[in-house]
Length: 372
Image 1 (cartoon, rainbow, N blue to C red):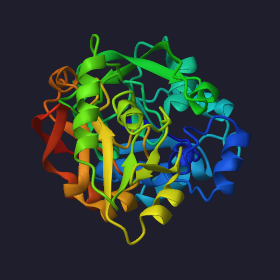
Image 2: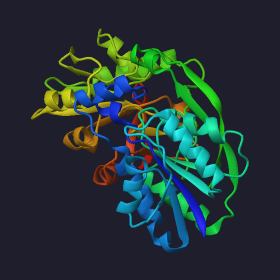
Image 3: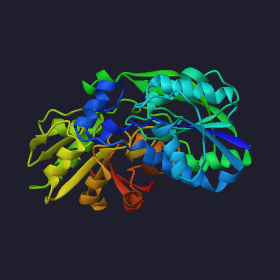
């Protein structure tokens, strides 16, 4: 019987919709809760585990009590073996202790739900392990690391394939994280911590987030010119984070939040570094458009670092009112051959599917497929 280790970081991703850009540290978790954030990682873990559920008679799940895995496993019909010692709320030490115990118990695979901080914790234990692969269920805010599946459902599918077939190739994938304090101040300071072993199958695993290619200043200026020229009066524009959207704000004469979400209308800044609640209040009953860019190396336009632009926000805007901006080089360098969206809402993901226009310069555009 195969053994699957399951770890759920119950607070991962809570800072996204409320604009905190992460939940590293108990103070930030409490602030997220005070702003109305709700845990979402367990819901994403359930999506992954439901894909594996048909194997429950030939699979033993080893996990932590309560919110760190037990609740998820039981909700999906499993009767898990529990590792004692995890706290409530959980800490980084709890995650590392769980990974250590799973290694000692000889699990075949570790499936974990969290963000880059969770990946770091697991790396501290399994970074030098040559036999136990891991699969990350994307549930955090940043997700720069390449140890995550493209969606929670794909994490489950990859785990199912590996546990059922056992012959998938393995590779070393990067564990990256950023300084959240610097991130909240608008400075991006990323660091490579090491590598974890992951199974490979098609496009189920996401790629490492990378920056733009070459000198792009003139191209970004042209993209900004095109977007600003076509902006409409009395329409609320939600401007996502990134160095590609920053020049649009500059063209409007406004200060941008490089790593946050800004809301503008009629040439004025309506909200800087807005969270989901603020955005929904500002767009209620109004025509709205969303401006986002493509994450280099990964291809995501939603669900990675811009969770403030939630499924509820996207649903109100509608697909036809989404403006995607990116340099041609960034788009054409994507290995997947399509863009990605992971909004956490399957209906909205399906709504976004198909083809979407990408502004790549002044009066220049590409039509590209978008998958969820």
